[in-house]
Amino acid sequence: MASGEFFKLMKSLKAGFNRKRAKPLLGTFVVVSAKGPDEGAADQAIEKAFEAVAKVQRHMSTHDPESDISRLSRMKPFIPISVDPWTHEVLTLSRRISLASEGFFDVTVGGKLEDLGFLSRGKGSARPWGEATYADVDLLPGSRVLLRRPCRLDLGGIAKGFAVDKAVEAALGVPGVRDVVVNAGGDLRLKTSKPQAIWFRDPFRPDHFWPGGFMKDGALASSGGTESVRDSSQGLRTPILRPGQNRAPKLVFGVSVFAPACVLADALTKVALLAPASLAQKTLDVFQAKAWIAKKDGFMEISKSPVGFPNRLGKLGL
Image (tube, rainbow, N blue to C red; front, side, top):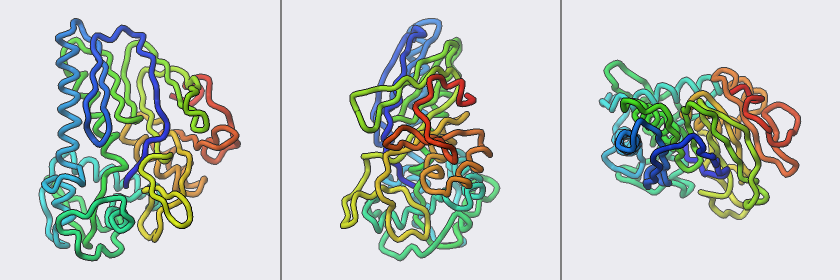
């Protein structure tokens, strides 16, 4: 499930971070900031964070023919294959979100995204993909996966958030490091000793930023917007869809989700955009998340009346 970044989640790093570095990964720039007892520890934490992100890219990218996801998409049905435990973990969480959202989040949409031109045709993509859904992905013991129907998997709607969480976890594993912020193209996870200021880019005035409040342990993610869109005879379309759709939905200005973990925030942006408001709210509640969709008159909280930008994240329950 592909996603396009729209909101720029800005942070004010006033906690005295030793180091801050950026690296191109996951189709975007991943920025890692770390604070440790000295610059050497901070550098080590940042390197560990990048290694974790690179591992996710290696196993879950649809662009790498040797990744777990590409290998699964080439497999015939009912032949289990072993994958990396992280891939199995992401597929397991994807299934939980699919069940909670009644299928509005589904990682088996790769074939449809390929047909619509949002994913390039890879090796083994000549065959028809059929109408597979998340229910056709069996997760077996020993990090094995079995597909009940031919399908092209796409973890583009959840793997980036997972990578951000793993990057933070890896950085915090370095002795003495207690403050880490990882931002992968707008998917943000932080764990800091002091609250950090969060700023949002106004979707209608890109040069203007709104104060989002303060947070020291949590995640933010965005989806929709102006990136990764295609022109059609009926207007711009986005690569955010569910199985059964024959056409990508029309362009929306985007949604921002606050959640305890970035993997949840990343995946739940698609639920917030696609599902009916009542179901979206129910799913968000299951994972202790909140979402706001951009409107011309401000932001609308899912299933709530239109509101302006929140002044403090504390009001969001984070």
